[in-house]
Image (tube, rainbow over all chains, first blue to last red; front, side):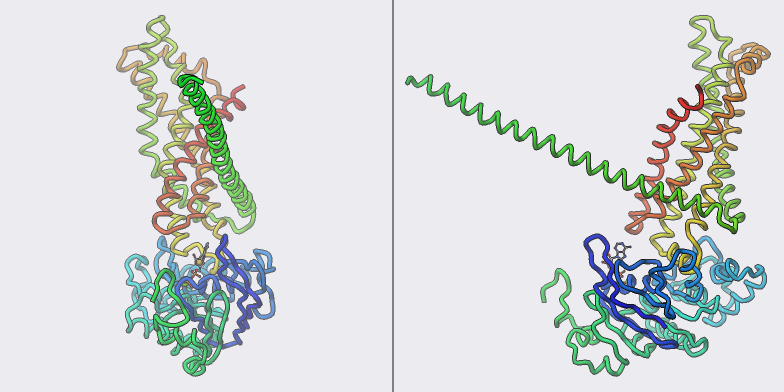
Length: 252
Length: 286
Ligand SMILES: Nc1ncnc2c1ncn2[C@@H]1O[C@H](COP(=O)(O)OP(=O)(O)O)[C@@H](O)[C@H]1O
Ligand SMILES: [Mg+2]
C-alpha cells in the first residue's frame, strides 16, 4: 500500500506540490492525470524516494520513507520497479545488461543465469533477439519495452510508470497499455502510472486521480471520472482549451 | 550684479550639483561592483560547499563494500590508455624545446653543460605533472562531465537510484580511484619521455657529449624531485575526477546544460591544477 499525506515540494520559489493526499491500495492500478508541468513526475519521484518532501509523509507499507536513512531507502527501492518517460536505459550497456542490472548487482547472480532471466523478461514484453543490441539501436517503442523489462526483472511488488505511452504512435501506445494490464494481472503488482493520455488512463486504471495546482482534486473509478461534475476535471478529460483551466500566456 | 558674475555663480552651482550627482553615481557604481562581487563570491562558496560534500560522500562510498573493480578498471583504461598518445607527444616535444631553448640560452654564458640538469628538474618537478594533468583535464575530464551530464538529463542517474544503486558509488568512486592511480602513472611515462626528448635534441641534434649529459642529469636529480612530482599528480588526478564528476552530476537544462558542464569541468579543473600547483610546490619542495 502506498499512501501520500500532505506532501509539499518547492524548487526555489516554484511551489510544485501543495499538499498532495493519495492512497493506493495493494494490487490496485492508480493513474494520476494532470497537465504538462503540473508536477506528476515530481509526485512519482517522491514515491520511490529520489526526491524528499519539504513537508508531509510517504508511507510504503506503513513505513514513512521520507524519514529513512539512505541505506534503508535503498532496501525499500528493491521492492519497486520504475519505467521512465524516456526509458532512461543505460546507453553504455547492452540491452540484456540493462535488464539484468539489478539481478547482477543485488541478486548476485552469475552472468549466464542473469542473462537467461533477462532474455525471459524481454520475451515477456514481446522482444526477441535484441538482447545483444545497444540501446541506441532500438526504436522508441522498443526502448520503452526494454525499460519495462528492466523494471520487472527483479520481480518488484510495486511498479511506477512515468508517461508510459507519451511519444509513441497509437498502436505502439496501445501495445504498451496491454503490457501494463498484463503485468498487473500476471504479477499482481500495485502500480501508479502518470499520464496525460486519457485513452491510456481509462484503459489501465482501477482508479484515476487528477493533479491540479499541486493538489489531488478528484479521485474515482474511470466511470466516475467520465461522469464528473468537476468542471476542471471535465475540461481536462475532454481536452478542451476553453474552461476553468487557463493555458499560461494564452488568452482564449 | 553684473552678468558675468551671475554667469559664474550659475556655473559654480551647476558644477556643485553635478559634483554631488557624480559622487552619488560613483557610490552607486561602487555599490554595484560590491554586490556583483558578493554575488559571485556566494555562488563560488556554494559551489565549493557542494564539491566538498561530494568529496565526503565519495570517501564514504570508497570504504563501503562492495568494491567496484570492474568499473574502476574500465575507467583506468578510459583515462590512461586513451590519453597516452597525447601525453607522449606533449612530453617528447616539451623535453625537446626545453633542451633547445636552454642550450641556446645558456650558451651565452658558457653553461651548456647544465642542460641535462635543467631538463630533468623541470620535467620531473613541474612540466611532467602539470602538462599531463592539463591534458587529462581536457580529455578525460571533459568526457566524464559529458557522460555524467547526459546520464543526468536523460534520467539515467535517477534510474540507478531506483535500481537501488548509489550513483556516487557506481559512477564517481571508480573515476576518482582511476584518476588518482592513472595520473601518476602517466606522469612517470611523461617524465621519462621528456628527458629522452631533451637528450635527443642536446646530444643527437646539437652534438653535446652524451656521457656528460647523463652525468649532469643524474648528479643533480634526486628521488624526491620525482616523488614530489608524483604526489602532485595524484592530487591533480583526484581533483580532475571530482570536479568533472561534480559538474556532470549536477547538470541541469538538457543538451545545453551538458555543454556548459563540459566546458565548466575543463576550465575549473585546469584552473585548480595551475593554482594548486603553486601551493603544493611551495609545500613539497622546501
Ligand atoms: N529537479 C528539479 N529542479 C527544479 N525544478 C524542477 C525539478 N523537477 C521538476 N521541476 C519543476 O517542477 C514542475 C513540475 O515538473 P514535472 O513534475 O516534471 O511535470 P510533469 O507533470 O510534466 O511531469 C516544473 O515546473 C519543473 O520545472
Ligand atoms: Mg513528467
